Length: 252
Length: 273
Image (cartoon, each protein chain N blue to C red):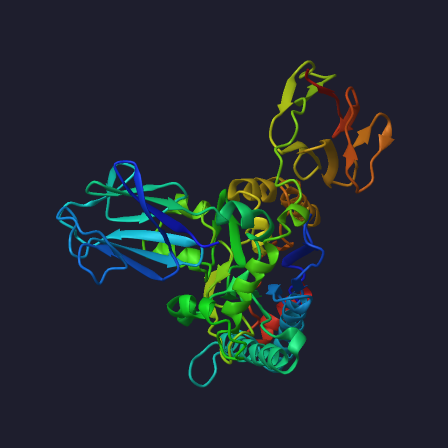
C-alpha cells in the first residue's frame, strides 16, 4: 500500500509510478528513476524522498522550477492528491494509507534507527528473519501490515465530536451577587475561594460534574454533602459552596 | 533526607479507551524526590515487561545509590553524583531489557521510552529517552522541558516540515531512541532550578497526543490545590477525547524549598522543621 505518482500530460495518463525507493529522482537524463524526455525538464530536475509513509519533494535547482498545486516550491511535504507540475507534465501524488492505518495504529510507538532509514526499501523487499539490528524496523512494518485488515474492528468511533450538548450555567441565588449568571463554556470551571473551599465543575461528553478540590468543607448539592467523588449535575440542582447558594441549569 | 514535606506527588496510569493492555509504567517517591515514567513498546505483553523493568530497576537502584552518597555531591571528576548514577543505572536497565529481549523470543524487539526526574537541593535533574515528556507550569507559563527523540521532532528541527504539517504527519509514533533496543543507549540528562509553586508533569504520548497543551495547563492551574484530582482529570480528558493510547501522568508540586543539608547545623535545622 505504498504511495504512488500518476504521470500525465494534457489530461492524458502516461504512467503510474509506485514510490518504493527511499530516493526517487525525476529528470530528463536517462539515469533518473522517472525520466521525462522534454527540453523543459532539467537533467536532474527534482527528487522525492520517502520515509515510511511520508514523502518529501525537493527541487534540485531546476531551470524551470517545480510547482505543487500551482505554487513554486523548494521543499515540500507531499499530501494525498497534491499535483506536482514540471513543465507541461503533471504528477499526481496518491497516498491513501494514512486514513486507513491512522485510526488503529497512529499511536503505536515504534523505534526507528538511523540505519533503518537508509535500508528501508531493501528490507521491505527482503523479508529476512535475521536477528540483526534490522529487527525493529521489520517489526514496525509487519505491525502495519498485520493491523490493516482489522481497523474496522479495532478502531472505535474515532473521537466523535461530542453530541450537541446543552450549555450549562450557574446562577447565584442569594447575597449581594444574587442573580449573577456564569456560563460553563470551558471544560473546567472552578468555584469558591482558594485556600478556603474550592470545587470544580467539569464538562464532559455526557454531562456536567461537580467535584470537591480543596478545603475542609465539601460542597452540598440539593442538601446532600458530597464525598470525594464527582457528582453529575442535573438541571436545577442547587449547590452550596463556601457559604454561597447557587443553581445549576441547562440552557436550551 | 526526606523531601515529602517539600514535594507533593500524584500519579495515574490508564489503558485508555482502545487498548486492552496498559504498556505504560510509573513510579514515584516523594520522600526521595524521584519520579519515573516509561511507555513500553513491543508485541503481546512485551511492552509492559520493558516499561515495568525500567521503572522497577531504576526506582530501587537509584534509591540505593543515593543512600551511599547524596545526589548533589560531586565525584572525583567533578561530576554530580546524580548524573553519574543516572548514567550508570540507565545503562544497566538498558542492558537488562536488551538481554531479556535477546534471550526470550516472546520479548524480542521490546523497548521503552523513559523520563526520570530527580529533585534535590532546590533543583531537578531530568533524564529522558524517546517521546515521553516532562512539562513545567511556572506562574502562568506552561512549557515542555524535554524535546522528543522522535523522527517528527528531527524533521521539524531540520526544517523539512513545519509544526503545522507535523500535526498531520503519520510519523508521530516513530521514536529515534529507546531503552532496551540496542546494546547501549544515550540518555539526555539536564539540570534545572526549581521554584516553590512549580508544577511538573511527566506524561506518556497518550496525553499530549489527545489533549492540547492549553487544556493541560488550564487543568493544572485550576486544580493545583489537589494533585490527585488534577491527575485523574488529565486522564479523563484524554479518554473523553478518544483515549486512543495508554495514558499516564506523574505530577510533582514544589510546596517549599528543599536545600541540601550540607553541614551539621543545617542538618540540625532540618531536623527541627
